[in-house]
Length: 81
Image (cartoon, rainbow, N blue to C red; front, side, top):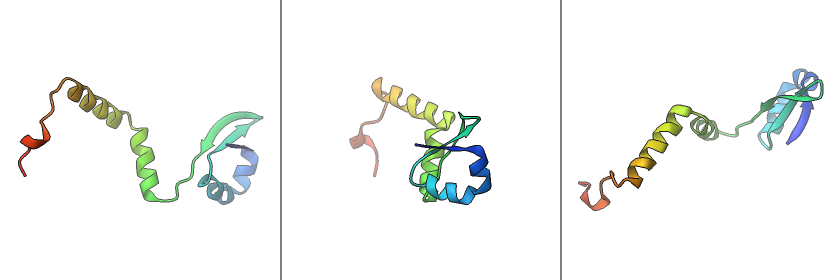
């Protein structure tokens, strides 16, 4: 990850957005990390990122996994076509 001062990012945001599609950019303020710039090459990447960071979605995934571990699922051969 590259580290770029906030003052540089403010002066040329479009340049750093393009760079962020290749690698995340740490934005620093007074030499210390203050934020991160993450670029997306497609809407699919944006959607995946949102799901990976959505606590409600992650909770539902964990609930589904727990249900499967307890054998509460329906066997595939019992699902009507």
